[in-house]
Amino acid sequence: MESVKKFFEEKNLNFKTYEMDKSTATVELAANAHGIEPKLIAKTMAFKLKDRSILIVTKGDDWIFVYKSRCSTGDIKI
Image (cartoon, rainbow, N blue to C red; front, side):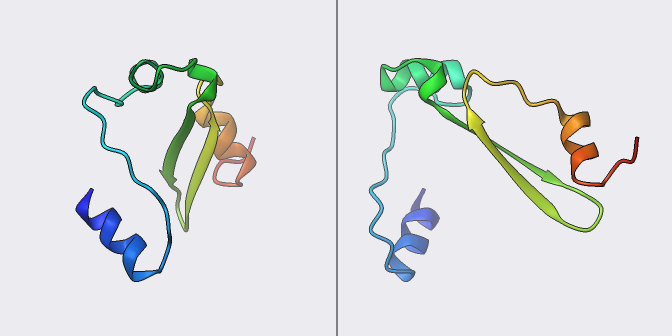
């Protein structure tokens, strides 16, 4: 967390950070910790492909099908 705060400070990014007492490791746990519905959580997944990295962000109750995602980036040809 300290490295994130330092990065924000170095880049003059005025973002507030929150540290939770409860685990936020999964969408369900994060929603519970914040007292909101899972669909309001932003789910983020990072993938390293052959020649690049991609980041997928979606609402918490959506499913991400890795195979279909890899096909759409050209990493796998159908």
